[in-house]
Image 1 (cartoon, helix red, strand yellow):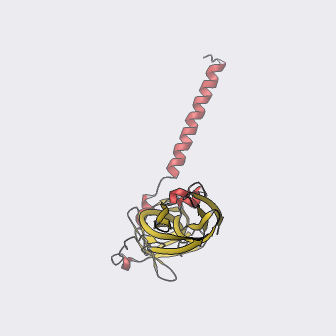
Image 2 (cartoon, rainbow, N blue to C red):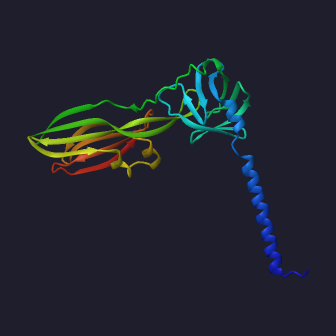
Image 3 (cartoon, rainbow, N blue to C red):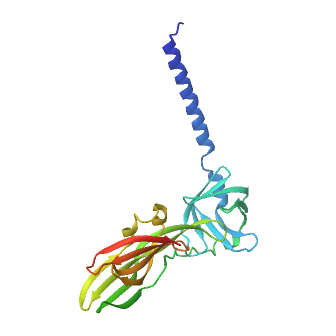
Length: 265
């Protein structure tokens, strides 16, 4: 049979596509989730040294012993344990009653299954955390013979912010925090000069996107008064972390607000 150059090229391309598909399908099969490993992992797991409960694996979910960590999905693929969206742990040893894996910080975590605690373990209701309670601050300022009164109120909301962090076992866990809204009012005598609710969304363009996603409005303090107006500093912080940005707010004597990022801590 006689082949043209074009037909040979087409045949080679088809064969390469077929081989490539076969390799991809085989690779996908190798990376499929292990239902047998998941079945063996069901139960309550305790730290080999401290005998403290680390988590309970039930169905597709991980339930932690503390009330601040959100339950997460888990699976086993090859020699890796996946928990939640970002937890990935290399399994060193795995049997029905023994589980060793490397934590996020490189430490070897050694767990034993505790059959006696299987029925005793009670999944705690997830606690949503707040950074501050309702907080009110009053400040009286005199400037060029005029008396001004500044009111600051920090109010917790029901807006939820998620943050991932490593727990004491080196596991990536998710905690949920309530954000705050700060109300600021400034009066000149009985006349209201400025009044507004300050929300996290007002500062999205002032801080890095990743920080913004995990941050909450924390607090606000009066700093000084000068010819520009009243200077107040608002802190935007990552919950459970020392990282904060200070946002300077300047309210002019005509009631106009300007904001500037000062620094990060």
